[in-house]
Structure formats: structure tokens, C-alpha cells
Image (cartoon, rainbow, N blue to C red; front, top):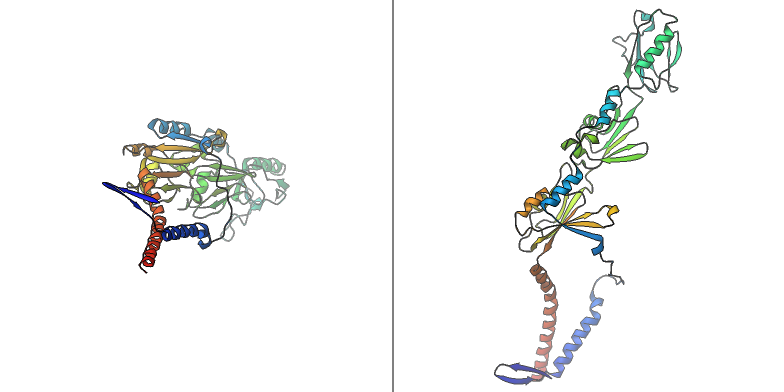
Amino acid sequence: MIKVTMFGKGCALKPRPRLAMTTALLIAMFATTGCAFAPGGNMDYQTETAPLDDALEVRPITFGMVDALKDSHGKAQRDNEKLEQQLADYDYRIGRGDVLNIIVYDHPELTIPAGSERSAIESGNSVHSDGTIFYPYIGRVKAAGLTVKELRAVIERRLSGYIASPQIDVQVAAFKSQKVYVTGQVETPGILPITNVPLTILDAVNQAGGLSPLANWHDVVLTRDDSDEHFSLYDLLQNGALSNNRLLRDGDVLHIPDVGNQKVYVMGEVQLPGSLAMGNSRISLTDAIAQSGGIDEGQADAKGIFVVRRADTSTGKLATVYQLDARDSAAFVIGAEFMLQPSDVVYVTAAPLSRWNRVVNQLLPTLTAVYQVMRSASDFDDLRSDD
């Protein structure tokens, strides 16, 4: 028996047996057969996972922490002593396939003139596959691996047995033996020859027409001798980090990938959740939130703005979680100094009231359905009673 107590008097309300029985049967039917009406198959699964608390490190975003991160990255190194020395010592070495132009002054019979119908390349001496050239009087001369200065000295010494004090000039008319490959997101990818002018990474990018709009400035790959070296063109071009520049050698492959997964992801209580590409710029936390339409002030928890960043494997942690408390809007000034890295996840949590409202909204359809069933059963019993 169900008893209902009212203010001022008490009364007992006996439920109709048929109504109680009908309600119980309907609830049991929905509970036991609900899965049968749901689309899709059924598969057992395990929802328990290992706790992540021990694998995460949570750090508040403060001015002191931002300054510490800047110091840890260090200032851009604007000098490159190793490269400067390599450029100072650079001297092109002749290779197989190069075309040489050799002039012996006062002896035109030893010099094939390059007239209007013949270019310097057509009239030059090609370096054969065995690394030698043929020259009158002295026969075969090994040229591959020598500098122009060294080859000139060899020819002068060997010709001195036939010509008194020969004066010789040696030039490379065509550089065909050595090359580098520039691939990926540049305007004109292709092959660049190595010449008597040293070729650096900056030179190669410029000669390839510059970077395309889809280029990933933050992770350029230089492949040399079956090993890859990654570095940032952004630091080189925007911050003047000359330490990232390199002198290129024969067979080097310089690859500029596209933006690809070089993005940050903004999720949670923002107006426009999604991903933001990091092409030729850096994005701060405040930038990311602003480009996502700002936080949803009606739903977001201002003290729950998080940046989830994959941690270094040496730390033993899965990720580092940085938290910005933006209940005071001035905190976004700190966010403007906090620079995001590729693959960072920005997550804005919902306020407690918003979470409760969502729970209620999820329960309302079920509660409404149960109420309708009970109301229908009650109406049916009333009709039976009238009969």
C-alpha cells in the first residue's frame, strides 16, 4: 500500500492492482528488450583502463613558468662558426661529367676556340667516367677529385717538358657531376647543381623559388649518408638561428614537408572547436582560443583551460598538462606569452552547472517516456473501471 500524507490531514491511496501490474510489466519489458530494438551488433568490451594520474604532470601557467620555458629553449644562435669556416675553406672539386675549359696562352693550337657556333661547353674537355681528361702532348690526366688550382698545376708541370714556361688557365664550363635534391613544399622542387659557389640550405630554398603556402617551416629534413637531420626553418628565417644552416654536399636531399599533422587542436567549450595549422608561424594559447571563436562563456569553466603536451620519454611521464586560470581576464596576457607546439591539445572544460544541465537533458527523454507509459496505463485502468 502506498500512503500519501498531506498537510492538515492524512489519507491512504490504494493503487489499482492493474495499474501497478501494467507499469511493472512495461518497465520490465523495456529493460529486458531494449537492446533488441537498438541498431547494430553486440560485442563485449572492457572499459577499465589504467589510471593516468601517475603518468601526467600538471603545471599552472604563470609568468614565471613562461619565462622558464623561454630560457629552456634558449636564445637563437645567430652565429655559426663551423659554417663560416667551411665557407672560407670552400673549393670546388672536379667530378665525373664536368666540362673543363683549358686555355694555354700564346699556344692557340692547344686551345679549341669557342666561337659563335660553339659554346664553351661544346668546345671543352669532358671528365670521363674514369675521372680523367685527354689533353694534347701529355695524354690522360686525372682530374676528378682535384680543385681547379690543383689541376692547373698538374697540366703546367707536365706541359713544361714540351713548352717553356706554359701559362695555363682552367675553368669549369659546366657543373654536371654533383647535385642536391630539393623536394616537397617549395615553388620549384628539383635538382640543384653544386658549383664553385658554396650552396647552403638557405641558398637552396631561395633557388627553388622559396617555400610554398603549405610548407611546414618547423620540421625540415636533411638526408645525408642515409641519416636524417631535422631542424626548424622557422627559427632560421624568423629568429635568425644561423646554427640551423648547413653547407650542402653532393647527394644531399633537402625535404620540406607539408603542414600535415603540424597542428594544434582546440576542443571543449569554445565556439569553433577544431584544428589550427602551424605553417610559417607560431601560435600562442590566447591565439588558439581567439581563432576558435573564444570560450563559450555560458558553458565554460574559466579556471579549467588546459594545454595537454606529449612529454619527453626520458621524464617517464605520458604528458604534461598546463593549466591557465582565466577567471581574471588579465590571465590571457599570460596565455599570449605561452607558445604552443605542434600536436598540443587545448581543452576548455565545462562549468559544473553546465555538466549538470547536460545530465538532466540526457535523462529527460527517458523520464518522459516512463511518465507517458504510466499515464497511458492509468488511463486504460480508468476506462476498465468505468466499464
